[in-house]
Length: 543
Image (tube, rainbow, N blue to C red; front, side, top):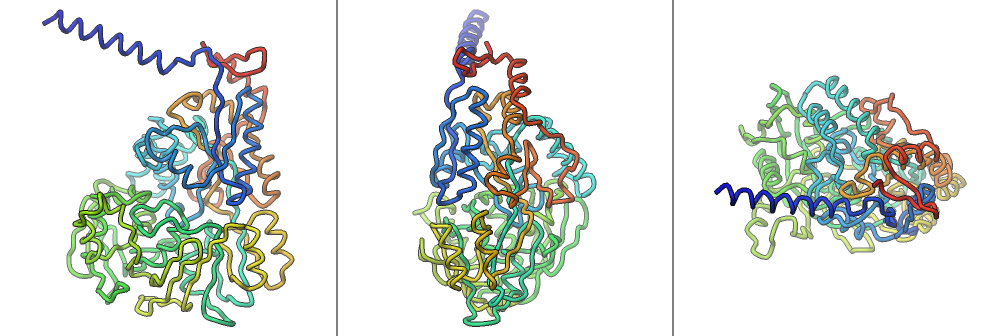
């Protein structure tokens, strides 16, 4: 028996040594060419240009860089699922309401629990100290204590360069002031917000709001979507228990009110006579079904807002209680405003369909919700049309919303000037801003967004798995120069680890350290870590 155990141990040891050699086969070798994926110039000129400036910075370290512009869907297909075969990418996170609460950026994007197949932590960031702080923040209902934990977590994130935001996307948005009235700005979000779509009025011409967007929808299934362009449409088709007002405070929507009974129990009362677009009543059973459904099948990028719910208890048609697994600091400002209410009478049939492996595969080509607008039609590449829902609890003033995708960003400005569209979503680039400033009938609105453009890197493999390499990178990427070159003064520089925007005042740690832009400091970091350079100036891994 002992002989067998000894042989097994030796085999395991040999295998382990072989496996370790495989992982570190690069020891002493030249750091291979790194490929950075980015947007095409047609989709996002600023992001495209930023990537080439990042390339120039990294090559100063002696690393060869290839830049590959490609469609966003292709980038997502490489960074979301296993085997995560990529080096780095430049991408942006837009400003949407569920991202105002820090849970989205600090947990979803960087907690190791999300570093899984199709998880939100696509970089594979893993830091036990960071995870511990975020877990503590997630598990308290005390906002001040939660802020304290998240401040410390942001400091850890800066120190390990867990992510590299380049600039916060100041949202320059434009609308036709001769056509639209009661246009309000939501902090961190701008003018493309829920309250505007219900309160805004058209004061001349046809009562149809025409929106220009730089990309088309991806899909209509709220369980599967990860793009903000889809989410903005879902916000109008579906209702939520709560919404965020223009000051980013949670206010009732489908809910009449709520009460935190204790750290793990929240009672919610629904408004009376709520209806889905097909006329069926919306009751507490639909809310329970939505959360039960999400817990069983997953809710895509919003999944972490569902999982804290242990059980939804239905008291009667308009009353229910959420029992949480543990105290959850983001439940009101995150969960209640992020999960669209699904009609049970429709979605329960989807589970039984034999032609679908999962409800995520259902196209939901005629979505039925209970929001302020009903789905009319979607012609891919041309337009999506929504119609006012008269039975909504707070009916909108606009009869129809027509969103039109523009493959060419320059065509958006022409459409705005000629009146073909009334409002631009999302934001404008520097050249477009200068053009809009010359148009008398167009109002330009600037909002410091909560979203940001960043370079993401695969921390599951070298060289990005080495924190010293990441620190060296932080010393050579000049966010001020990139921002000024690409956006002039139309965006706000960010920096290594600074994932919470200045505009999110309560949650942004104002005392974070910065990496001085210095090639000498970058090389000193690498030298101390054992990196070397060959006669051609190319960087080599430590021996």
